[in-house]
Amino acid sequence: MLFKLIYLFHTDFSWLNVFRYITFRTILSSLTALMICLICGGWVIRRLRAMQVGQQIREDGPSNHRTKAGTPTMGGCLIVPAALFSTLLWVDPSNFYVWIVVFVALCFGLIGFADDYLKVSQKNSRGLSASAKFSLQIICATGVSLAIYLYPGFDTHLNLPFFKRVVPDLGLWYIPFSVFIIVGTSNAVNLTDGLDGLAISPLIVAFASYLGFSYIAGNVKIASYLQVPYISGAGEIAVICGTLVGAGLGFLWYNAYPAEIFMGDVGSIPLGAILGTVAVATKQEVVLVLVGGLFVFEALSVIFQVAYFKLTGGQRIFRMAPIHHHFELKGWPEPKVIVRFWIISIVLALLSLSTLKLR
Ligand code: 57M
Image 1 (cartoon, protein in one colour):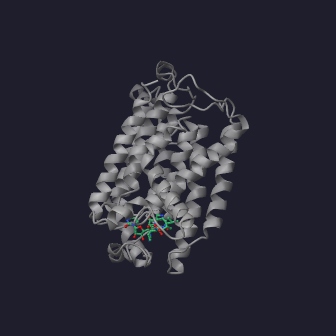
Image 2 (cartoon, rainbow, N blue to C red):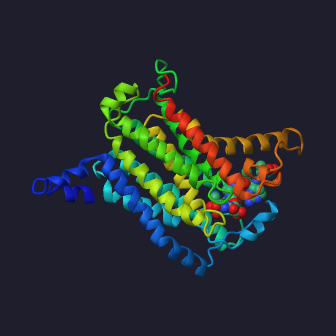
Image 3 (cartoon, rainbow, N blue to C red):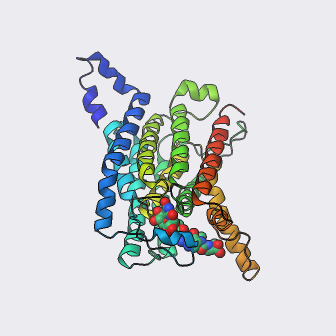
C-alpha cells in the first residue's frame, strides 16, 4: 500500500522512482518484518508466559525434551502478522498472487491456531483431530489451487528441473497436483518443527531461494535467457519471500537453541502452506523437492517408519521418527542435530539454484 502512496509523488521527487524497483521493496519488506519480530518478540514471549500459553510435552518423546515443558508456543502469532503487515506495506496491492498468499496465510494460520488453542486450553498435545486438520487443509488448498488454475494466462504445463524440453501438460490434473504440493509442504514443515530452530532456518533458506526464482520468473529477459516460464506479476512474490525471510530471521533470534519460544502449529502450518503456494505460483513446483529437501526427508522418515511398523507388527527403521529424533536418541546433542540439518538444507538450496543453469 505504502508503495502506491509514495509513488503518487514521484513526479515531484524523482528519487521516489526507486520504490518502483522490486529489489528495493524486497529489501525494505524484509527489514520491516525483521525489525517487527525483533522489537515485538520479547513482549510476545512475556505475554504468552503471562497467559500460560506453554508447550505441552508428550511423555513418549526424547527425555531431554521434558525440560522444554511450558516453553511459550504459538510464536506463529508473531511471525505471520509481522509478515502480512510488512507485505501489505511494500507490495503492489493490485497483484493477484499477493492476495493468494494472504488467503493461504489466513486460512492455514486459523487451522494452526485452532490446533494450538485446543492443545493449550485442554493442556494436552492432541489438539485438532488429524482428520479434521487434514480436511480443512484440503478444502483451503483446493480453493487456492482453483483460483490459480482459473487465473487468466496460468499455464498448466509442469516445469521439470534439468529437463527443459520435457513439459508435460497436466490440464485439470494441475488442481489436485497443486493441492498435494500445498498440503504436503504444510505438513512436512509441521513435522520438522521438533527441535529449536530446526524448521525456521530451512524455511528462511527456502524462501530466499524462491525469492530468486520469483524475481527471475517475473523478469521477461532473465526468464527467457534461463529458459524458465515467464510469469507476469511474479516479481511481487519476491517481495513476499523477502518478508518471510526477514520475519523468519527475527523469530530465529528467539527460537535459536535454547528456544525462548516455539512457533506452534499457528506458525508451521501456514508457513509450509505459503512455501508450497509460492512454488506453485512461480511454476517451480518440482524443484521444491530439492529446495525443501529437508522437509521431504523428515516427512518420508515418518511415512517409512509408520509403514514398516505396521508391516512388521511393531519393528522400527529409525529409533524414532521424524529423523531428527533418531539422531537425538543416537546421542547427538540437540544443537549438533540442528546445525547439521541446516547445512543439509543450504546445500540442497544451492543445488536447486543450479537447476536454473543446468538444463
Ligand atoms: C508436530 N511437534 C513437535 C511446537 C512446534 C505421526 C507422527 C510422526 C506425528 C508427530 C507429531 O506429533 N508431530 C507434531 C511436531 C512439538 O513441537 C510443537 O509443535 C509445533 C510444530 N507443529 O512449534 O509447538 C515438540 O517439538 C519440540 N520442539 C522443540 N523446539 C522447537 O522449536 O524442541 C518444537 C519446536 C515440542 C518440543 O518438544 O513439544 C513434536 O515433536 O511433537 N509425532 C512425533 O513427531 C513423535 N514421533 C513419533 O511418535 N514417532 C513414532 C511414529 C508415530 C512415527 C515412532 O517413531 O515410532 C515425536 N514427537 C513427540 N513425542 N512429541 C516423538 C514422540
